[in-house]
Length: 369
Length: 107
Image: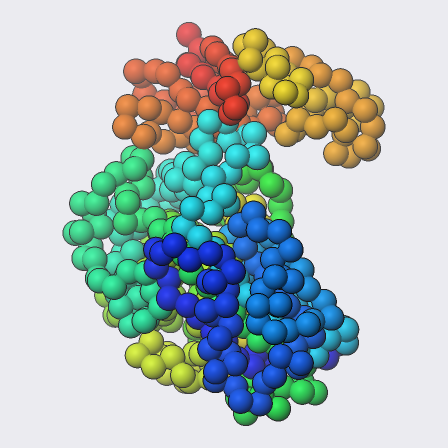
């Protein structure tokens, strides 16, 4: 297999607006062409779109609007990890030799049909994501004694980080007390423990090692990929104090990249809800089981930006199909040394974790400069 | 409307069952997810084990497990303290576009 690298990226601000999914996508493609004079539409072999919108033939529509006539063009949908699923598909096309250059474009509107999990009969009448998150929170609190104050540290730190991200939905900080006092949606889930659906778009350009130097002197390589889907139904998560798909996908990615958690300098975690970040830190090997809470407290107390430097889903907002791509762009920028105020000093190896539908499916990418 | 939904609407909880593999096939399906053989619709025993729960205001919701394998989310009606692992009775099920399960502690 050929090595595959990231050459460039583009973001559209996460916000609430009336843009169509096509306009959102175009607004994140434009900066890629603006910033890369050596890139022409004719260079692009593959265009993949990742979204939960109901738009048909979207990759071809957006290709046409961008002046691209790709060899391969289709959409990738996998709820909240659509974005990294798109990146893995693009990686495969390039690594196999079917293509040299691939553009992956993710976007979502704030009223996306992907936000309510109507198809999962095992959820009964509890179709909104707050209910599954509340079950994980109950289980983790019961098993490890995790407290509501522990959980509040995730939101406080990620909102702090998001203030240095010009593309984030939230532009203000929230104190621990703000979070503790925010409206309770369930016994163990407050409004400020939740990521916000919003409009947003993110695009990323991948290229083979044979051609990537044409576009950039500082490529970032995708060295590890792990994906696992345990089921579609939420109740197939047997142990609710952890997320099995995270554990399995991260092991795959570490093995492929020949890395361990100790080798990772900077991390994007899928904090759809604050409790998720605590569990993911444990699942991915950054903290021992039960110690995710003390890990996030330490991040907050030392203002350590190693985890979710762009602000996570909680600080940035969560436009489903764009999220995994935006997470990958953050690690790309960190490893290029271009993350400005968010920069983690000396970052050489980073990890992206993106998951969907109550961790029934997870994707982990490991990137290296 | 599927057979599962029709039965639920009549307050009957059925699941697909594979006689060849001798197991429930959950979520409901027209084929066994092990052998791809035909299934039959079989009533599910109306007692369930409490796996996890939380509250939204005055409403208690949680995950319960029927017959050691079928897990669903349902509403739990009680004024007493709940314990993980305790048995609950399915006192009502329904379908109005969404499957609904209502449970209460066994006496």
